[in-house]
Image (cartoon, rainbow, N blue to C red; front, side, top):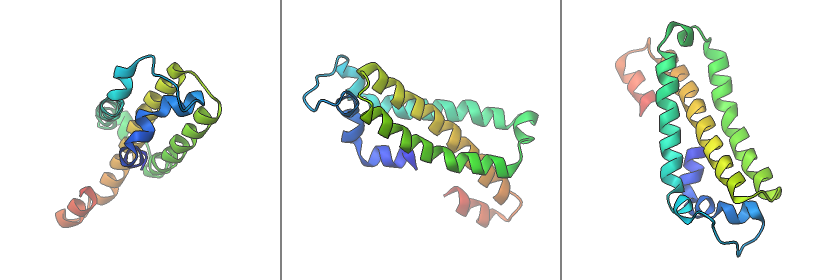
Length: 136
């Protein structure tokens, strides 16, 4: 959910430092970061997914019950969306804005992993056509 919201409004994220500082005329201290912020966001999300999905293949990861996986995986995106609001209202620095975006990416990767592994485990026992509809 959050990744879709971020890619649907790229100008909000590429100019998030302005909202975080509370100044619409603010100049970026690190313009290359803000030009490439969506790339960094996606790399952090997918990197976290790789790490977490690898963990979910271990016996310890598989021992986590489905209900907590799905509940956490579905509640985390709401927390991510709500985290953007205090960062913008609190008037943090550009470094705080960077940290907010990257923490959101890491939490987003974790929540995607929990949802993916939970839905995969739920649909796995069914015939292939049902499982492929969950994946796509």
